[in-house]
Image (cartoon, rainbow, N blue to C red; front, top):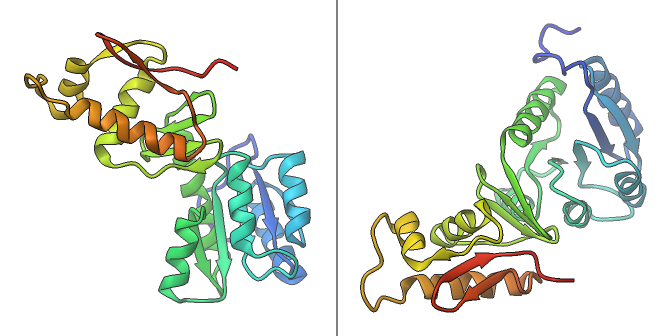
Length: 235
């Protein structure tokens, strides 16, 4: 193996899907990643990539933006609907605005062409380790990543304020358990709830509205006179 390569992949190979229309680049990446110990699949087009994603979900996707049939941003969006698979985008542009758009649209990292395969290998290992090390709580269609502080509802990203995430993190630690307003206040603000204060109720209302906007209805339950709970809605 090339001494410039990062550490090899573990014995249990992770599956990597390359979506790239340039056969020369795809063959190079297949050889490099295969040599590093990964199981590699290749799709020369966006639609083929989405089919492979559904048939055999990979641990990570390497995605070229300049595909002939589908825009890479659209593929990234659809891929995230199937689960939180890390996506590393290969792009020919170095424009900051485009990179920001990619990261906000679902990409986890990006590389500007031309790049060295060793750098791609290192970024792949970072993304795979991050996924293994982050606790993911699932309540129905809700996914809460504790370490990265990311929330998804049915694969759709939900943008929360720090206090709203702290509230959801607390409720998701014991799904179904009712937390009193005082418990919530102590957890989020580190002190008991002040008399006549409605700060907890306001944050619950804001969180509930954002979940509803993302399509997650009925998850936040109010138990009158007691507090709040996070529960999977009855089907």
